[in-house]
Length: 371
Ligand code: MN
Image (cartoon, rainbow, N blue to C red; front, side):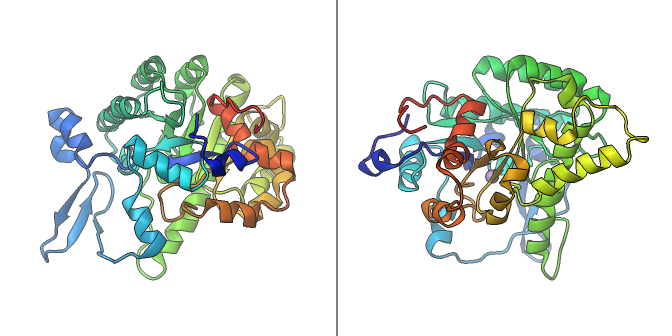
C-alpha cells in the first residue's frame, strides 16, 4: 500500500487520513459538463468596481480578497495535487499511509438549488475522480458524490458509482427544505445499503457555509458551520428510525470535529426518554446506540473531543489531516497526534489513526504487524 520508507517502517501503526482533498484541474467542469450548464458554473467575475467576486449559483456573491501566505500556509496553498508522485510525496512526508479523498472546488457541487445542475456537477466529479484514483492503486480512496434531491436519479447514480469501483458515497450535510428524515429518501438508503457503501457527510456542503459577514465573520462561520451541520445528519439518522430500518447502513460526519458529539448522543437519549409521549417512531434501541452501531465521526485536532471518547466509543472515531486545507494538520500531523493523543491507549490509537477507517472503507493493510 504505502512506500516503505525507513521512517514509515518504524511507525507502530498504519495511519489513514479519513479526510483529505484534491485540487481538481481548474477547467474540470468547464470541459466535461453538459453545454447547457457551462455558463452556470461557479466562477470568478469582476464587480462594477473591478474587485474579484466569486459567483456561485444559489449563494450570495463573495468578494475574493488577495492576501499573501508564508511558511506552512503557503505550502498548503500549493499542495493537493492529483498527480500521484506529488501527492504521495506529501503523504510520506506527514507519515500518512492511505487516505480518503474529497473534492475541493467540488464542495460546491450542491450549491445550486437546481437538482439537475447538482446531479451534473456530481457526475463530472465521479467520472474524473475514479480515473485519477483508480481502484488498482490502494493508497487514495476517492468518494463518489451523490445529489440526493431527486431520489430516483440519486439511486441510479449510487448504482453506477458502485459499478465504477467507488467504496464511499458523499452526500451534502443538508438538503434545504428536504431534510433527511423524510420518508421519500427510503429508496436512497436502501440503494446505498444494498451497494454496501458507507455515507460521508463532509462539512461545507448543501448550504452556503458563509452565512456570517463583518466583524468576526471568518470564525463565526467556522464554528457555527461545523457544529450545526454535523449535529443535523447525526440526529436525523439516529432518531428518525433510518438506522433501525437499514441496519447495515453506515455513515460518518467528516471534518466537524468530535467535541460536540458526546453531548449530542446524551441529549438524544435524554429527549427520547423524557419526551417519550411525543416520540415517533418508537425505536428498539436508544438513539445513541444506533450511532455506536452505525455512525462515525472524523476530527483533526480535537483534544476536548478525545477526552470524551468513553461517552462516544473510541471505535467510532477516525482521525483525518484535512490535507491540504488550512484548518488541517498537514504537514505537522505527527506533532498534533503526539500533542492530542497522549492519553489514548495503544489499542485506541490504532483504531482512531487507521484501524476503524480500514474496516469502514475496506483498505487493504498488508503489513499485519502494524494494525
Ligand atoms: Mn475536509
